[in-house]
Image (cartoon, rainbow, N blue to C red; front, side, top):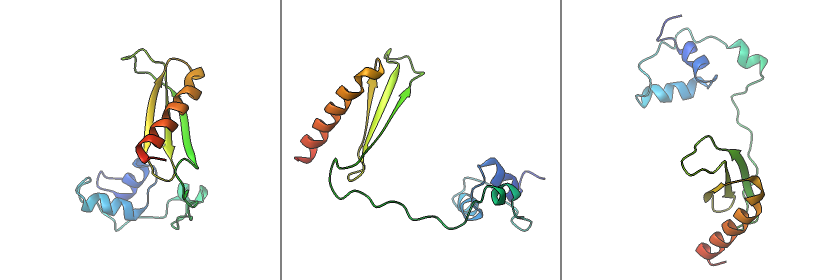
Length: 123
């Protein structure tokens, strides 16, 4: 398999679709690739990967009605915080990140997040 093989890049990029690989070539991210021998990927078939995307859930119609959150351990020691938490408002898609010393600070961070969103959007 040569370096310009589209199937090689399909595998390297996590089994993305041929259309996305072609877009990367068109955008100049990848050099010209050979698509003539783009074969069916057995791993994609086994994983039941489909070409059709499924319909996503409906987005919230109100501010602060649905909040997506995640808390993670931070390897960055710049500010000596061990964790960070993210909040994404489903309606506005605004994302906020807060640094935490410990996970017990999550509720306080949420309260700050809620107050900031309400203030910015005058809710």
